[in-house]
Structures are given as C-alpha cells and as structure tokens.
Length: 186
Image 1 (spheres, rainbow, N blue to C red):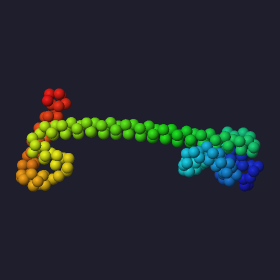
Image 2 (cartoon, one colour; image 1 turned 135 degrees about the vertical axis):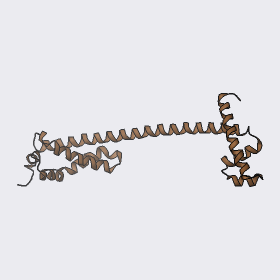
Image 3 (spheres, rainbow, N blue to C red; image 1 turned 45 degrees about the horizontal axis):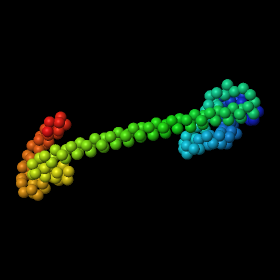
Image 4 (tube, rainbow, N blue to C red; image 1 turned 120 degrees about the vertical axis):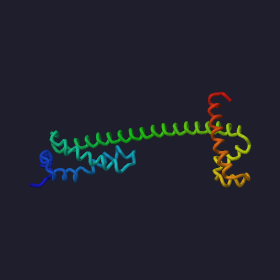
C-alpha cells in the first residue's frame, strides 16, 4: 500500500518512511517559503537548509501528537516551520551579539596593552638617556635599530667583547634605574 493524499497522516503516525517522503514532496515549497521569509536577513543558506531539515525531523518526531485532517496538517507544518525559523533566527542573532561583545572586549584589551607598552617604552627611553653616551649609543643600535654586536663594534671602533660587556652591564644599570624610577627614588 503506497502513500497518497488520503492516508499520509495515518502512515506518518505509524512512522512509515514513504509518508515522510510524501510530505517532503508536497510541503517542501511551503516550508522553504516560510523559512526563507524569516531567515533571509541572516543571508546564510546553510542555516536555512538546516532549519528546513529540522522542520521535517520535528514533523516526523511529533507526528503522533497531530490530530486533524489535511487542511489542519498544512497549518500545523506551517506553524512548526515558523517557530523553528524564529528559534534559528534568535540563536544566530545571539551568536552575533556574543561575537561582537568578545571583539569589543578583545579590542579594549589590545588598546590598554598598547598604552601600557608605550608607557613602558617611554620610561625605558628616559632611563637609557641617563646612561653614558657610549652605552646609550650601543643600546639604541642593539635594541632599537636591531643591529648585531659585530656591526656595532665596527661602527664604534671597539671590540665585540667590549660591546657585549657594555650591554651586559648596561642591562643591570637599566634594571636598577627602572626599579628606582618606579619607586620614585631617582
């Protein structure tokens, strides 16, 4: 016995797959229309297709709850489609709001981090300016211009070992001066 317009509701309630196929063939345009109307502002075909599939799954899972004739069935499937689509719309809007909030928090943290880094850099430059002229030049070439110790040595006419020693001692001096500066001892 095949599924037709007179027995598809009974067969659906008995979980006969041919009834689901029949419903999909008959009601797919209606379900698509309602779903597109609600979800088209999202401009996401994947969500629309997922919602349509979810509607037919819901009809299948809740078929025993349906009471009525074919006219009532059309209204029932229309109502299921509308509410499913609204649920999908709300979920997607909520996701978008959460992503937007996370982006705001992330960008605020980035701005704060950038401000702190700038303040620390300015503080470091002030302390470097307190170093002896040769040490200051070495630090600027090494850490701000990214030059290698050999190149710095040749530019200043000193040995590489001398440059490395001045960097080592300079770092210790800078550390002490930065600590004192932060403590307000300078």
